[in-house]
Length: 229
Image 1 (cartoon, rainbow, N blue to C red):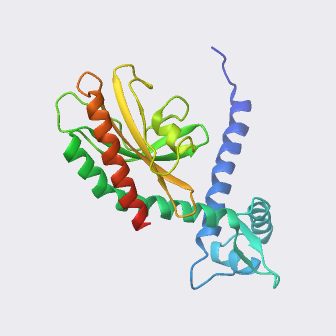
Image 2: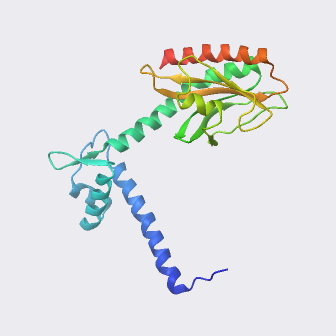
Image 3: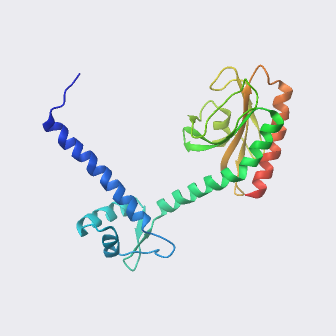
């Protein structure tokens, strides 16, 4: 075990606190923008947050450099493209979750298996955002917020563009050897993959005929969701 002397620990602790303070101040700057205050001057930001001018300049320049805010022609600052993309993505996630939930419940009620809605969390990972659990005692369960690899899973395959609109993928074993999964992508009008729905359950209970039936059900529900988007 390596011991850290007080003389080396304290500066590290201070740097950690300074980093947290800077991050919170950066978020505070972004929160200043509202529909009523779409542009702000450096002075208005400084006064609103009661920060020294030098600190405000440093934070604003950092946010501008990362495209979270942008400097307009009149010298005022407005939300940048990066933060707008994040806001749009979060709003889209929330709206899609509300939109797909009744369809997940319908699929669960018909198949009696677990049904999930997921999106890509990164190019390599899938995150589950909505789930309706199977009512059966033996069932396959994910949880909201769980992440799984995109590679080697049917849900990852439909989310990364490995199948076309309306095409369904299935597998008898992905991450877990005794689980059968059937998945379909959800597309926007321009063809962008917005998410995917999968039905999962223990392989001993799901026959090949069940997989074919689930594929039909998923294709129909995906078409209904896409019609609403």
